[in-house]
Image (cartoon, rainbow, N blue to C red; front, side, top):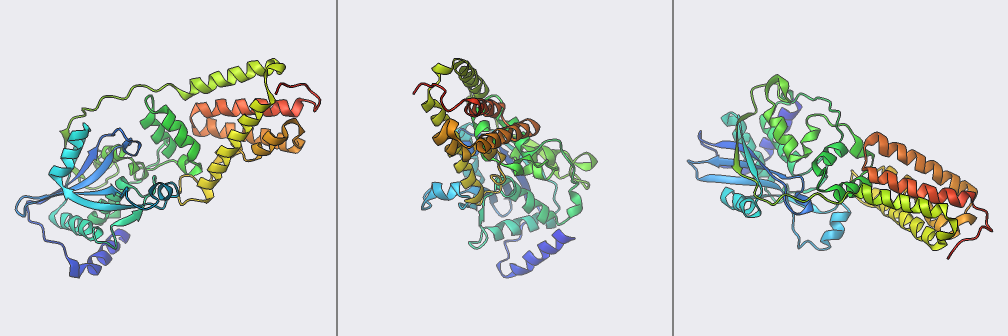
Amino acid sequence: MKRLLQLLVILLAVAPLRAQELSASATASVLTCGAGDDFYTTFGHTAVRITDSELGIDYVYNYGTFDFNTPNFYWKFMRGKLDYKLARTSYQRFIAEYQYEGRAVFEQQLGMEWGQLQNLFLLLETNLLPEYRYYKYDFFRDNCATRVRDVVYSAWAMDTLLQRRSSPRSYRRLIADNLKGTLEWWRLGIDLLFGLPADHRCDASERMFLPFEMMAEYTKTGTTGIWSGPGLVEETRQLLAEERQPLKPSFPPLVLFALLLTAVALLTWHRRAWPRWADRVLFAIAGLVGLFLVFMWVGTDHYCTQWNLNILWASPLLILIAIRLERSPKWALWFQLACFAVAAVWVLVCGLAPAILMIIFTLALRVAVQLLRPDQSPAVG
């Protein structure tokens, strides 16, 4: 009922701007596109296609566009203030781009009645208006896929179609599954940047922030899927096959940081082989990473970077320890060790990249040395 009322409000508000009425031959479909070579295409893409042979319409509506010429583009992107927008293009132009890039494209034709299809067309055309086409991108809650999900729900105008189901997988786990093997360094970076919101366990609707999760849910019609009414998808077909060269497996960051931990442990065993400047560099880098994570938490509009417990181990307190080393206050060293322990539990429970554990153990080992070493202990450097 709530969604139906929202649709009625929109229809009344845009009555003077009413879109062209579609014919009985019109169809609507969801396009799901495979991953690309750029990071922002790693998880694929989703768009909506409206066709009407009688009116000569074959449009693709794409919520994932932005302007690289925007002033201070990268600064706005980092702060979560970059405007994304809806764009409309011809199907031929859209498919030609993906064919050139060698990316797969799937089409799922929606089983909409004519009135629902007209609602969808009107909503999309309304969203193209300058006052509605722009939105603030949110990786989990408001992206090119969730916008398609929401506009289809609104056009259907029935909340009861969605059957919310719990899932053992969190946002973080869904992302990790998509990056496994080939993009492990990207996964490490994401796990460093994302905070507690990424550990939320997703229901069926929330999983659809990823294009291929949406495609899978649309396929699960009837009582076994998210739709309790008639089948959402009438037909699924592949428009383009994947022709990109598969990515080569990346060198695992776990191996690199495990080797670092082993080297630090061996040098720590031979006390005279570990210079003081190495501790200063190690702690300073971790502390600066912590300051960056604090900025991403409180200085940006990104929902996913809030409440980031990585600052427990990448702590700005480590900058003080880098300066003072063994002359650091005992409470600071003990407090930092406790933070390491809490951070390690979080990494294990929530399934962050295992390489982070190796980093925590490395830092904890050297902080413990500062705590146990007398001020007069000899050191190189």
